[in-house]
Length: 454
Image (cartoon, rainbow, N blue to C red; front, side):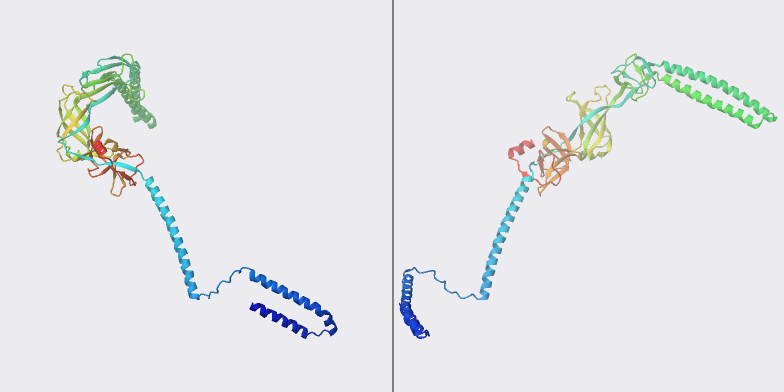
């Protein structure tokens, strides 16, 4: 209401002041006065109408209260807190991603590491005797070939025959060698006649040289011709002896006493001399008293093997019987492939009961100084380096160790060196297992442990 009261006087005053200050002529003012008053009244009504409408309209948007500006230090602090919050949120997000990636990488690595089952080797009580497989061989064995070519006329000894040294075994017919021998003898007679003539000529020219009837050159030529004749006679004699020796090979004799184990020819067969591609073995002769028994002693037992020590040999076909022999010699070196010592035992065989080529067992008295363990046969690795087993170290890494094998029990193997009962040996190791490889160990159940060690 105060606004209306103040507005109306102001407008009236303005009208009065306008009328007072007018410089128009009085005539014009009198004509226009009624019109001006009507216009003024109309404006007043419009203003009043506007004011009425303004009072009935709802209040508009209130102007926000004026906030005094923050001091500069406080504003910087607020900005710094916001930046710090953003940095912390970013760091937490980055750490979360990195943790997830590390967990994923670790899980992937765990999945790529193979899992293996292990067992512990079982200790065994040392035996008083070391029993090893052995192979019986003839003390001497020789294939017999023909030394001259021809046709077999007759053989006198068959397989299984016991012969003595120098005994006739077969006879060969050699017609070509016979003719060559006759030819060489006739050629020798010719050379002898030529040599006699050369000697007479040389003596005659030597006498003529004394009287200067011939020149020295001619005398020397005659003497040289005589010497050439002597050399030709010596060559002819050697050829005759060679063919006579070939004639001597028409009969085949035993080079030593033994048993014929092979006969590969029959009468009428073509015989070629020598042991080459065209040669043919006639007989095979073996000396069977005594017999050599070869066996490979593991490295752990090698110090107990002494030359001259008494041993016993047993064969399956003679149950309960022992054939005693003597350690004749050893290789004096360990085979780097098998880690064994090659040993020869000589066994007397006067009655011929033992046959060469047989398989037997050699019993060595080595005492009880060797520690032995057994491992499952499926723990063995066959590599170019020899027999090995995979042992898991304290860092869960594979260690490939060479082992010395004693006896084979079928499901288990006797190991004389390379592992101990405290080691963890991998069973069923994959072929791709390598030395130093990281693995996961899956402990076997009690039943598996018992079954693998039985």
